[in-house]
Image (cartoon, rainbow, N blue to C red; front, top):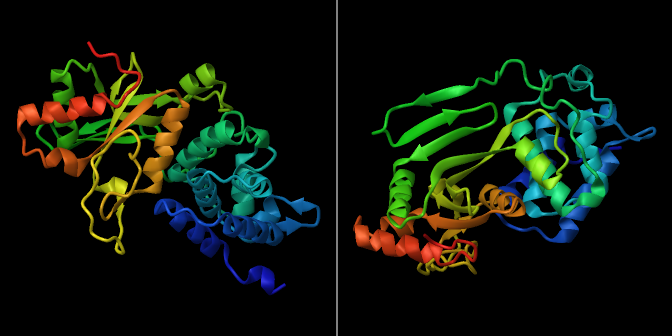
Length: 319
């Protein structure tokens, strides 16, 4: 009917994606209404199936909706089942899914998204019993994207050194290196861009992930022994609030890490990553870039500031 086609799949995906990206929590009734609308539009003769879902959505759009649900912490049962049916199907047949959706496979961003969603949903909504196919993501990737493994860097003096793995493209900024050195001076042993792979998560926490190992989460600065991590949040971790009252950003502490700071708000991707790492047993402390830069480069000031961050951790025992 015309009412079922009032909104296109892309439009519905964009609505939820926008709320999630901006870390703007919509009313629960809105999410429920959108989930019901999608369910009605994807209903086939025998309920939602791969073919009925493909008439309304592309798989990238379904992945965006799934990611948005994880960021918002809302997992409507029928909607989540539709999303998994549309993204990976019910018969573990990636070639069939390519034919049904007329695409070349899942984009790398969609594959990364599914790992985030799987971990979040398995911990926060275990009753759904969502599961990725055995052997995923082998055979599911877009053949044109490639998944190279290796390291590319522009040298120690570059602002950004990039490390590419099968799932991650890691960046180490000049600011991050400086922060790491300051924590070193405090006796906080650390490594930059500590990577967590799926086998570690599956074996240690029993989360439902495929056996194929994939690196998919990283911590900017990590003390692995005590599982204390420092996330150096640059400008890309925030959205600008155009209707803020212009108040000065509050100093970071353990109680208001995600409170709005002046006209800055932590974005959805940063919030989801924090939740995932917390679920995996890490104590994560966030360092907003402007607080560190405002110290003016003085070594004692930087040490005092970083020590104040460590003092927020209930887990770190010092040297």
